[in-house]
Amino acid sequence: MELSELKLVTAGNLIKLRTGRGLTQAELGAKLNYSDKTISKWERGEAIPDAYVLTQIAELFGVSVDALLSPPEKWMPPEPEKEEERSYSVRAILAIAVLGVWTLALSAFVALWLAHIICWQIFVVALPVSILTYLVLICVFDRKKQLKYVVALFVLSLFLMMYLLFFHANPWQIFLVAILAEVLVFLSFRVRRHPRKKEPENSQE
Image 1 (tube, rainbow, N blue to C red):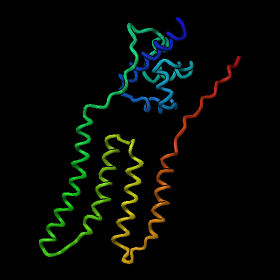
Image 2: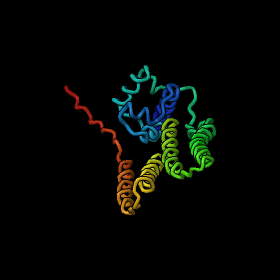
Image 3: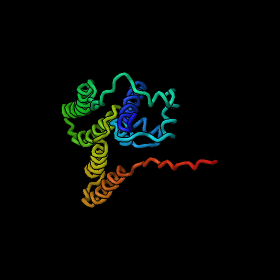
Image 4: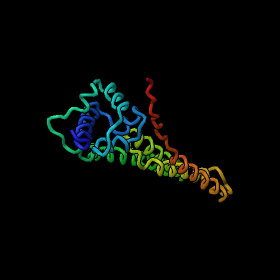
């Protein structure tokens, strides 16, 4: 078997084992101390794991190394992972949750208004609460691509709330601190956990 064919065979077996276990490429990479990009490269047949990693994969899925390298009946290139069918429902849940916060805020405002009390501060508080609700839900539904922007918006909304509610003189200088806080948020999301490189073990004779 040629090397190119061996790569495709291993790729097909790896895809079948990973999806059968319900693991994402990132989750499998975490178990093997490799990045999801490396897993993707293996599954596209562009590279093949070394002997040590093949042993790890075999132990993880309870198969033999020979089974990983044995050709299946037919190999098909992996299709791009499709967005889950429930994606529309997730968006609906996010919208309902955020609108629910604002509906409660508006209801409280109208109730106080009817009692001849104008309390616009309710909406100031509703802003960070609605963003926090959205933030929690996107973490629950694993929609983390926009996480850093939502966190940054939440931090900014907190400074805005403090500016409008707690500082009667409304010092604009507070936003200098807000700018620094936003920078810290974006820098925090640039921190990455790099997989440790495997050092080849010297064979002892």
